[in-house]
Image (cartoon, rainbow over all chains, first blue to last red; front, side, top):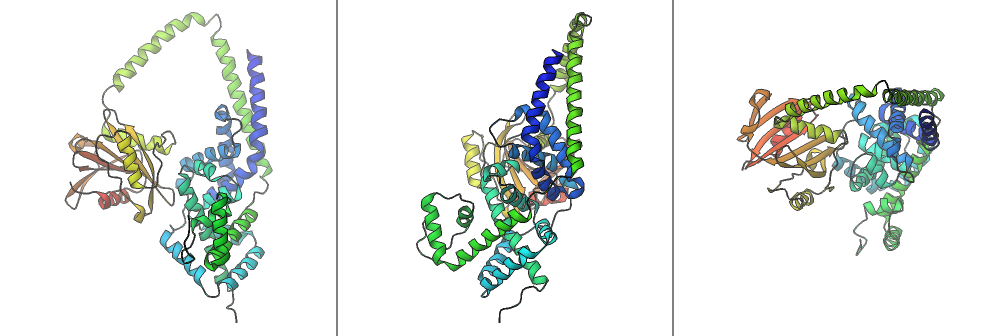
Length: 195
Length: 274
């Protein structure tokens, strides 16, 4: 019985490593933007441990990445999020108004082109700062869908919200990120009024 | 989806187009519109650019090498633990220990009976309410009615047989969006259990059930507040604040792990005198 146990345990371990370990990069990538660099490693390690313990619940053929993110989200919410300082809440009305103003500006096409050109030259820190200023719910939607390429349904499951809510957080997150970058460009006086 | 003229603009459809989530006819319609509408075209362009560079700029890089090693070591420890457990099970089922199992089983049944007897006393309402919140927060309680619309949730409760009219209030102005609800069985009655989340992820749960606030245990109460002629009974337990009030023959309670004053103010804002 003991050798049988070892054999099935070995197979289980092999399968887990084959499916889950290649995804460590993705988990760490999101973890460091949820908790900050210092705790990201612990969060990922705890996620793997819990995933391994409950690996029998994983349905083969479904998205292992989404499953691991769901576990990581649960660990994050229950053990890490409370101690974190959250960015100032964003009023949805303000966000929409600022975005509409940005769209309506007479020199917007010129402005947009400049931000696009400048943005590509910025190093990672400007982007990281812009992302970190987003409310956590917007940031997570953007990271899970745009960076980790989960479907709306998978991302909604990870952050335990209806798909409609995920969609509107993503919509607002993308707009808010753009506005942060635009504001950074303006602050650094990089954008000159067209002559 | 049909737009009659170019004065009206697409909004979320632009995102659905960007993410390839539109059916072919809708896709054509939106594409045609953005060809002639500079405002929608500009918005689409901003969303497209933001998505593209986000994908590139935040893409995963390497994991610190010691982290991978730490994960492998943690899995090894887990395997060893499971194996020890497996071996121990085999040993305990052996000849030497088998006769003792009968005695053990008898003791266990005795203990279980004692626990059952002690726990059959009715649990106080605040404990039941805090337990429901903790189960939901820990992902052990699923919502059956998923909707962002308060009326839809009220209809859901009615369809689920909740024996009183529910009032699911809109807290959108306070940055709390309704995410869904379910019927939650308290020990002796059903309750309408519905959940809000803020944009920062805070959870606020409201429960409504038939009863009188006089059932609440006075000794555990933290404070009694009054606003607009309504009395609010505040309880605190396990880091949660629960604010109870009476509406007709229904008890309402707001529960959260937010600061207690914030929960109280939300209850003030939404309670109505019946």
